[in-house]
Image (cartoon, rainbow, N blue to C red):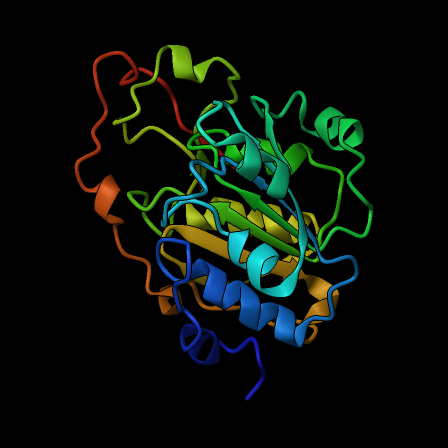
Length: 237
């Protein structure tokens, strides 16, 4: 059995600080992929002192990785901001590459985690850095066979309710984007998909989407299209 076989990966959905075992899965992945820099970037880090927020904190605390985290608020204590290198920035598809340049992100970056509750697809599409592993949030309310993403709009927070089901992208849309960028989808954990560079798996490897075990995530069950965003169109990709 290969290390990236779906049944093998599921054994390592073990939680440390994340929500659904994402950081346990990342630990396992990097036991099988040699880190080049032990450096990770996470967008939407949240309050790192709480469990269920950051996905890369475990790698920093346990394995002495270096990190760069982006968060739109100053909710984290100064000591934590320094330890985890948390920067107050609003990340979008227009500024992502400039932010990587601003903070001198190495070309040999190992991991990028994208969790910004909306424009995740467009940010990854624009990002020119090629980490070994990408973890990205998807919309669990969308059908596996749909290939669609919310409209490209850096101002969506001004009109879209945080409880709206109009956000993010479908699994298939992100799988197709990954393929275009040279990545293979290997697993789903909670509402996050995990991709690795094509060269890290056997040529032609392709996970069956039905084997991912995708379920509507708990916080997505109560999401609905409201009057403000009900006229917004999904973008077919």
